[in-house]
Length: 270
Image (cartoon, rainbow, N blue to C red; front, side):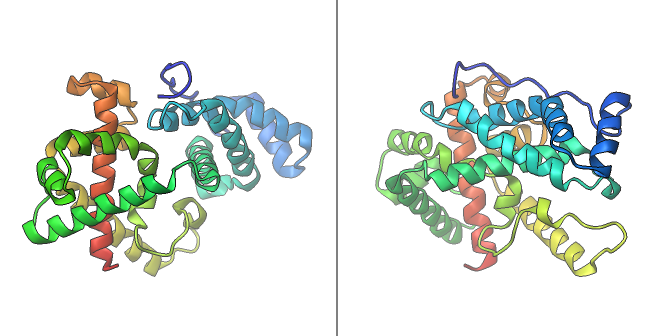
């Protein structure tokens, strides 16, 4: 957890189609004439989204990562979302903006290379061990089996999961794209008036592979993935559900992501 340890609160459910006449008027003006003053009003109105997304991303990062830096990166994502939002596609602005904000934060983390080279190397070692064991055992290996494969103790493996937190801060769209050359799903949102049947089939196949990979996780890992990515709970909230510490949930989240990446990479044949 970063900063003062406070959990991010839910963002305001407001947008250009939610009945807020004042902000709807700003959107209409901005679309007609994208002036700086109107852009600034929209940024100010939706700024709580940035704080919320930065707080969620920050719950999975080491303590030395400053949530203030994440917010600064997220503001650029919000501005980008405001500039590129197309309401005629039927997507809520909050949904679109939160994806853009998260993407901007993760891009900045990667560009800053906040993950030490040795940690990246260890992450690859764990993923390769998971692939080898999965191939031999035809099931998801236990932590004891992974530790034995790596030649370390179980406590050392759990310490390693803690060190690998930053490498696991990825969206599900990144997991689906493991081993493939593809952009963000946000950049390929379908146009309702021009449906690409090939893209639909590819997306359906990606979702199927992800569902199969999640199904092969242990029960606890599946719970963590479901609560974090689908129910939008924080690590601390998941800890209360499972009756474990936030630190332990962070380890479980890292383990689940590494296992998913290894499984999806294996499915992609890379």
